[in-house]
Amino acid sequence: MVAPARILLIDDDESFRSILQYNLEQAGYQVVSVPDGKKGLKKLEAGSFPLVITDIRMPGIDGLEVLRKVKDRYPETLVIMITAHGSIEMAVEAMRDGAYDYITKPLNRDALLLTLEKALQYRTLKEENLRLKQELGERFHADQIVGTSGPMRALVQQLKRVAETDATVLITGETGTGKELVARAIHYHSRRKNDPLLAINCAAIPRDLLESELFGHAKGAFTGAVSERKGKLHAANGGTLFLDEIGNMDVSLQAKLLRVLEDQQITRIGEEKPIRVDVRVLAATNRDLHEAVQSGEFREDLYFRLNVIPLQLPPLREREGDIPPLVEHFLGAVAPGRDIRIDPEVLEAFDTYHWPGNVRELENVIERMLIFETEDALSVRALPQEILKGRLKIPLGKEGFVQLPPEGISLEALEREIVVKALEINGWNQVRAARFLDVPRHILVYRIEKYGIRPRDGKPSEE
Image 1: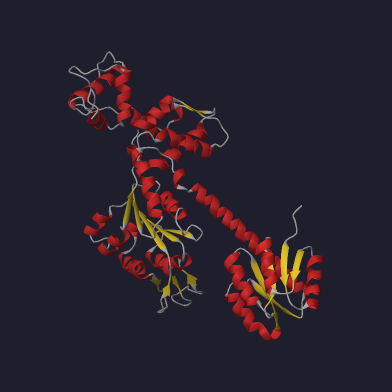
Image 2: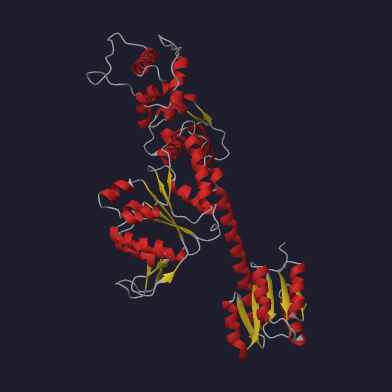
């Protein structure tokens, strides 16, 4: 059973206070009433009240002073003002100072109860919104970024330091490396975490629509503008705007964005008066913006303004050792509660694959394999063809193919010979040999140990 909401009632008119208290208690509320603002503030110090109803005109501490102190000390508490018809202007002033609403004397019971119901629903929605934001913050916490490789550890450390500032960040990396995840982690680690985080994909919206989406427009600014619209830069005020695929933004819009970054002001389409905003911009792209600047496709001044703090996300193929924990993470997300066994050959195939789609491709592959596997296991038979083909890659010979003897050959013998040749070509340097074979170094080391390969002259170099 839900406990009745507690209401603090402050009014110096004893007769009116008694009538109001009776009506509230009849409606199921728990009411504590006091005759002045000083006693009301002491009650607030002693206990929690989701809602305060206070008269505006009172001797000593009046209702406006009570409102200011409540908003300062207990910002989550809602305040409803009581006013006479002749003091409506004061009630409007109170709402500008943070009051939720006002009620007038003489009392209209139905209007009062409706106002209280709406106020408490509003508070519940705010609490739910805060809870969801906290959950998002936990989900996008930097420590939730999966990966223990050197590049990822360095990235997380950079991310945490960057989040503490208001500096503009340019996040670069191949498609699927997790640029939006990093942007969200920066926001939820920053002082802006309780304010909006909005995102726009600059490549997905036509130029004319993108301008309106960013800056907003006045009613009648163009054909179809039947009402005014608040742009994302305005809606994200106090928070963060994430501009994905910034490299695809039209050059004319780039100039307008530059002015926003420099002046923190926006001008809606169809208006001349600028609006001041406080918004942090995070941008991301898979393009080489320096090259785009050279070709005239991207403004140099905007590039330097965005590139205050660059964050480069490594591709999955360079994140040695990160694939197994990523696989476990995606298994838990796609098939929660299932105990999935992973065939070692699957992880081996994953390690040797190039992953052009990076982490996003790995997630999609895991989901696809789980759909087609009937047992609680990931086996080689469920691997997509592109990964199986990558698993069977071998160096090309003079005529474009390895020359195989007509009588056949052991695959393991062939693989051993390829590894030996790659080591010989690279002076038994494991790092260069792994790069030559386009595999992570630990995969090469595994093959060396598997086949008992020893150099003809000394130990294989690890450098």
